[in-house]
Length: 249
Ligand code: PEP
Figure 1 (cartoon, rainbow, N blue to C red):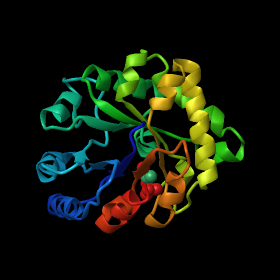
Figure 2 (figure 1 turned 90 degrees about the vertical axis):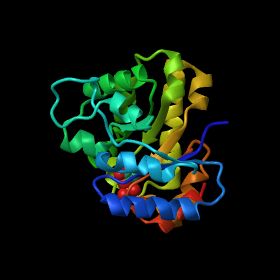
Figure 3 (figure 1 turned 180 degrees about the horizontal axis):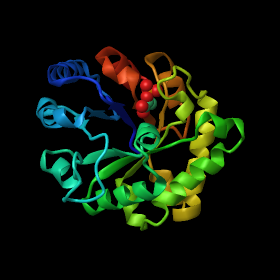
Figure 4 (figure 1 turned 90 degrees about the horizontal axis):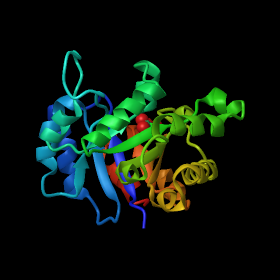
């Protein structure tokens, strides 16, 4: 059985007080669920967030990390620093990192390698832009993002990898891929992983969908056989909405 995951990416939102309050509300209201539940507050609040989730099933994860372990990289965060405060999972390759901070497949490959060297788990994000879809290139774009950053890995690495398909045109736009579009792409992703690593690994890898998932559309998207949960942006910022989405699993 693949793990089901609902992960909230808080992006650059919530100060320390708001972080504590949202986590406390989430922990108090969290329903019984078979899904793993993750939240990704901003770096500066990770340490406190880890304390706030103690004793609950909520895991605190990071939104990013650097590809080196230490050194002259002003403003950056090393994976070992995350592990040292109890953060063992990291989101890599979010489309906002790719679009606004110039993260390329080549750079992401280095981050993937570093995260693995540290024994971290990662949620690796990828997805096409609107022009790619309009031009019918969405499958090619997704395949090359996967191949460029992940296809050099040994098979053992895959137990540390969660994939998150996030069509850029659906992120923060209120526009969602239809459940059929999500399923079509997720099935393609699984085939792509099968071609590189075999069916056993492809069947075991958790593939999340991200892009304007809300309490009202979550269960339909999550009901698709190759969709194993969601990476949630805006709707993760309110406990009741996030819980509504978790209930859709
Ligand atoms: C995201 O940023 O990963 C995301 C899916 O955002 P939203 O849910 O707001 O579209």
